[in-house]
Image 1 (tube, helix red, strand yellow):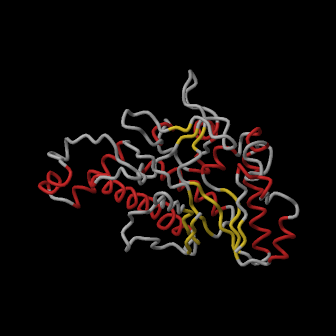
Image 2 (image 1 turned 90 degrees about the vertical axis):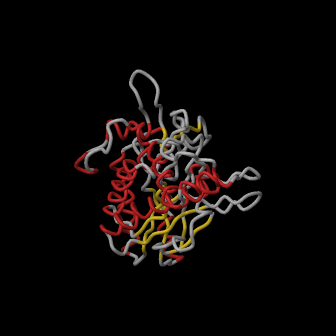
Length: 315
């Protein structure tokens, strides 16, 4: 395997758009390469000239022409296939939903400009929702989770799509279809960052999870939940919290791990392999074991762990 991750923060260290890339591949003679972007990074930035020339240089070729950028990846895949090499593309599933959401024009720039103005139903099918803000992870007060500034990634704030939201999965499926049409043999999906989302889909999903797992008396005894239907959670954590875990938080983390795996299976295994049965699949996860576990599927039951995936990848 040859891996070329042209990271926005380290573009000069791994630029596969360099003319020397294919001659280097010819020397290395790999069976498989991980190269190219097909998830949120592509659709948020490929149409933005200043992003392609600046922070995302090295990850996306071109000058802000989305179709030309997509064609460049397709041409690269064809060149690699001509050499008998399989291609696995990077696919970020929740991160890099970037742009501006406030103002008289509503959500705009970055991903929001793509969704509002550039979404072609002939390419992607009908939009699942009219307002792209309905796709985002939400805090308990209803406002979106946001990273106001992350140097090197985006000129705008970064938001997170919610994979537990079926409408967001519809968007991701449209991107999967595009990637397969551009010739990838598989996807390695990353940034499974559920930031404790409290959108209607996460709240409903967690209540259904508890309802299936515990009887009312057990909910009362273990978690102090008197009436699950009426109960209002103040949080549904998505990450391990060092020295601050409770029985309920562990249950929330287990729900997160299972729900995210189910969402991944829906998008990539069920849908992706319905289009391409031999689609190679993996998850790019993180092993932040010091000072606390950071594995995004930390609480996933053994019978679901990596089920249906072709290889394991930890950063």
